[in-house]
Image 1 (cartoon, rainbow, N blue to C red):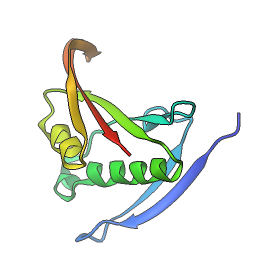
Image 2 (cartoon, rainbow, N blue to C red):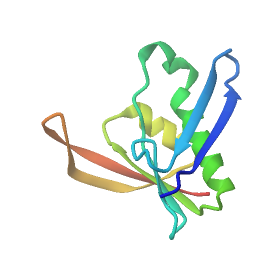
Image 3 (spheres, rainbow, N blue to C red):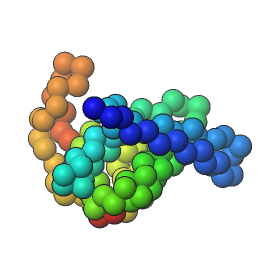
Length: 122
C-alpha cells in the first residue's frame, strides 16, 4: 500500500512556536481517512499543561482540516470525551456541530466514559 504523507509548517501567532505536522494515512491516532466516502475521523490529543494557553490542539486540528479540504474531503467527525471541557471548547470553536452523546461508550483506564460526537462539513 502506497503511503500518503504531507508536511506543513505554520507559525502559531502570537507565539514563536511552530508546528511541524506530518499526516500519514497509516497513523490512525492522528487521522483516519475514509477515501471512498470522503470523510475522516479526527482524533483529539492530550496537550501538555505548559502549552495549553496557546491553543495548540485547535491549531493542529485546523491544519488537519486544511489537508482534508485540499484532498476534496466533504466532512470530518470526532468522538471525544464528554467530560473534557477543553476539547468541547476546541471542537465548538472550530465550527464543529454537536451531534449527540454515547453513554458509557468507551473504556478509558478501567472506567466507562460518555463520548460526544462532533462533525463538520468541510
